[in-house]
Amino acid sequence: MSGAHTMHAVAQSYLAERRHLGFALERSGSLTLAFARFADANGHEGALTSDIVLRWAKEEAQHSDPFTWAGRINVLRPFARYLAAQDPHTTFPADSPFGRGHRRLAPHIYTRAEVVALLTAAGQMAPIGGMTPTTFTTLLGLLDATGLRISEALHLSCGDLDNREEQFTIRHAKFQRTRLVPLHPTVGEALRAYLLVRARYGGMEPTAPLFLSEKTGRALQYQSVRSGFRALTAGLGIVARGGHPTIRIHDLRHSFICRRLMLWQAGGDNLGNAMMALATYVGHINIGNTYWYMQAVPELMAIAGNRFEAFGNKLGEVHHG
Image (cartoon, rainbow, N blue to C red; front, side):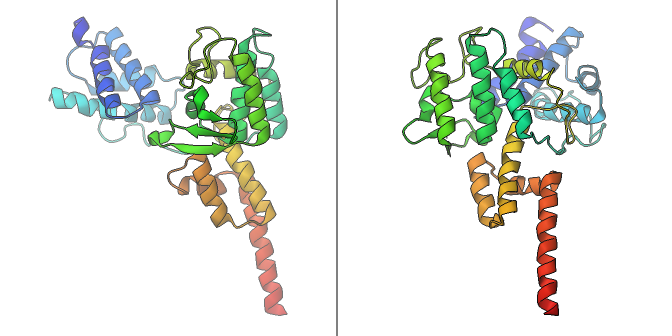
């Protein structure tokens, strides 16, 4: 293709149009551009074909399994519809050649000892004495203490923190919704300590990013966080529990939600009201996403089973009394 009509150029135009309409397209945008680069590098010209899509899904996938391939194909479907509207010769894999591309695996629930080990390792990242160790310790500690999504944390600006009220305003939540997140006083204290370090590396105006990259002096990007997380966890020896092969940053959010539910379950609280509050706090649009943890996490299932057994025994006592 000529430079103006490469697959990469077309993908960039597509993503620009979608983002103009309000779609964030962070992961899907990255994968769409990755596909476009793959297509151009392999000499693909003309209309999109099923063959180049299937080759990319299998050859470029980090994990060689049908579920990953299926997920990558699903990401490209909107882009394929966009291309088909411009070129009727566009083809795309029909149905699901690799099976389902969506599933929810049981998460890894961090123990408190694992979180301590994680934060300790973050504090020892290079360069010692620089901003990176403080940034990673604060960022990971914030995710553990609030259950924020990593994307929400990385989009925080200095002006989003209200020190007087001990709360954050989350302005870039999923589906671009805004919510308030109250903070425990110890979290507020840790953030203020971070800001003293942060002030030495860049402006603190309200619109300035809260988390900076020490290398670039600009907003910390997810790719850098993911690379740093993999490096600092490599020697910790934490064995992943659940359905994923390795521990993940997002499991800190899962762990926060599960710890809260376990406390309420063990305390005999009214889960109906508690679930509504928790769903609002973590930004779940559908409360079913919050209830999902009750059947996905063995620890929660065990507590629920024990409560049901105790309830059944109590009914039996009443019946035989």
